[in-house]
Image (cartoon, rainbow, N blue to C red):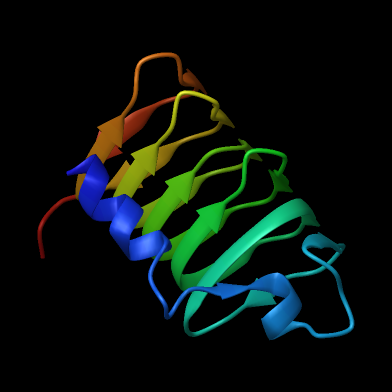
Amino acid sequence: MFNFFRTLFYSKETKEVNVIFPQKSNIFNCNSEVEYDGTLFFNGTVNGNLTCKYLKIGSSSLVTGNVNADWVFVLGEVKGDIIANRVSIAPSAKIHGKISYNSISIEPGATILGNYFKRKSS
């Protein structure tokens, strides 16, 4: 399952922040809500909620806000709640908040300071 997430986030369709926001470099620092309807991969800081289809939070990233996505791959730190259908948490990840998921993968070494629970099927 973990390799499946890796192929998703390293596919040709993955957009890095410098492609989505050309005026910025690979490091994305933002103090507002971010909404994107595709795949977002970034390293940097976001102070606000993140909403997108597929999200990869890089190892040097800090998100202070809630994350809402179909699939989330966390390598960095999230200070907020995560709501996603599929969640993959790498060993370098640190999450402070609740995780609501349909499918989850947690690698040994990851830190979760909060609760995680399976969402009810609709």
